[in-house]
Picture 1 (tube, rainbow, N blue to C red):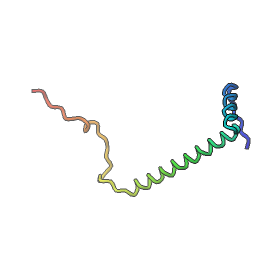
Picture 2 (picture 1 turned 180 degrees about the vertical axis):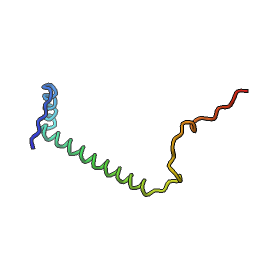
Picture 3 (picture 1 turned 180 degrees about the horizontal axis):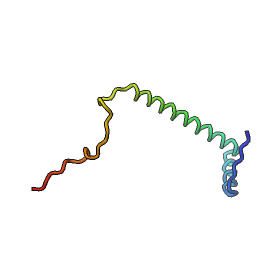
Picture 4 (picture 1 turned 120 degrees about the vertical axis):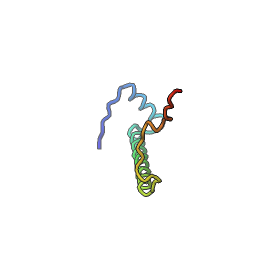
Length: 81
C-alpha cells in the first residue's frame, strides 16, 4: 500500500534529518510509530474490557443505582435567630 503525506518543506527536511541521525528511513519511523500505537490501543481496549467484566461481576452495596442530588452536598440551612 502506498500512502502520501504532505508535509511543509521545513518539517520534511527536519524529519529526514532526524531519520538520518537514527540511521533509518522516515518510512520505518512511521511504521514503528503506528505499530506501537496500535499495540498500545489494543492493550487499552483489553484492559477496559477486563474492567467492564469486573464491574459486571461485582455486586455493589447499593440496592438501587445512586442518583446524585446537589442538595445532599450541602448542610441544611438554619434559620437565623
